[in-house]
Length: 543
Image 1 (tube, rainbow, N blue to C red):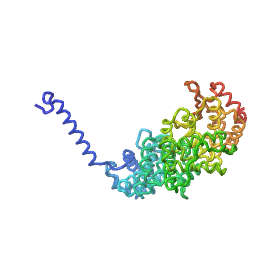
Image 2 (cartoon, rainbow, N blue to C red):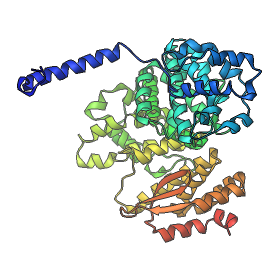
Image 3 (cartoon, one colour):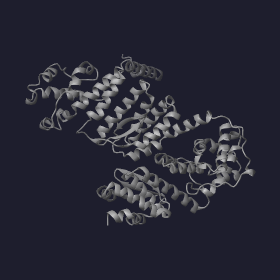
Image 4 (tube, rainbow, N blue to C red):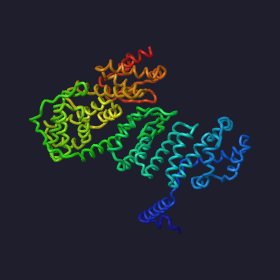
């Protein structure tokens, strides 16, 4: 009778057999880790193409190529390909393959459909071979060549993008193995900026790499880099990092959308928090003591720079209330920050209080926990502390014309719970939202001469009656720079949609750009279209 017959198996026996099978399969897999080879199937089609081309009239007199074809194995796979490094180098860099030959033998139902990608497949395969052999410098060189010298062609955009995403991951890991941690992070950021990427995996890996970089040193270099992102060759973008020009291929993303992605990312927020914490931790202790609320002076700030100018006293009172809670009364860094904020106000240098405001912003979630311990009157007094700190920080950044950083701060106000403006007065909330949308439009005007900047400005125009003239002027500046053909195409593709949930959100789409903005005035679709079609840009380019 079989050991596995029903009469011989009880529940315990089944569990034992299943556990044995699992452990056996696990051990077998772990002891035979597969060599890295992204194009495991394409390398064999490349072999078939080599064999085929050796029979054609175009290569009759190419003795080197014929010798290579003669020595090919019956198949290429991830295990034996490493033995044909010389062959791969010849195909990658020396084989001359004309467009006429490719077209002549092309068939969508035949291995010849991949003939045009032979240079890329050979180059990418070499990179994978070097990576598996832990020759990371060579691997990086050939990965870059596979992306930019011998880029894949003739396949779908999605397929090419997946190829590039994998290359960026491998380049990042190779740099990490070489302890080039800045470069390892940058290549992960390439994938983060690519909206088709596996975002969760990128975010997780960035979190693993972050402890290896110095946030204080890396953050300013990253922010400087973001300002330099621009169009490169073909669909590529490029930027300057520490004096070195680096290119990447983020699929259909624009420079401005790439900046916005980084500045709104968890990685950037964490980097800012770590940089601030490190700086404040190394700051010398202050001998001052925090002023009590009753001695608070009537401070003023420059209303040409700052929104919420009338709220500065409310903000400082809130800072002091939090400073007297059990948690923050014992926190030397918070106490020093509060004193420094007040000193800036006394000295009329509040526009230099960026470090202190950043600290309040980055401590937001700890502050939120302390608010819960206050009585109702105090809770009311501090409810906007985080919003004011972030808005004042944003205004300083805007005054310094650091527009990419400003967009990151705006995304924080929009998306992170606890940063929205709170008021019993609906009109005050509307005004705050208008101010924020106008600031965002102004930031896009400052650095994003693109359709992405234009669509965000339109979102602001629909909502901001108080800034209509200014936004129309900015949009015309961008439209003039883009040219009539691009602007007309953008406007022709523009679609609007008012969300069903109480009409509180508007979606603007002009492929490939898609943005969501609040519907502050609760306009319907007809009213939204009217706003767009009576704008200066519409009249200037469509009428």
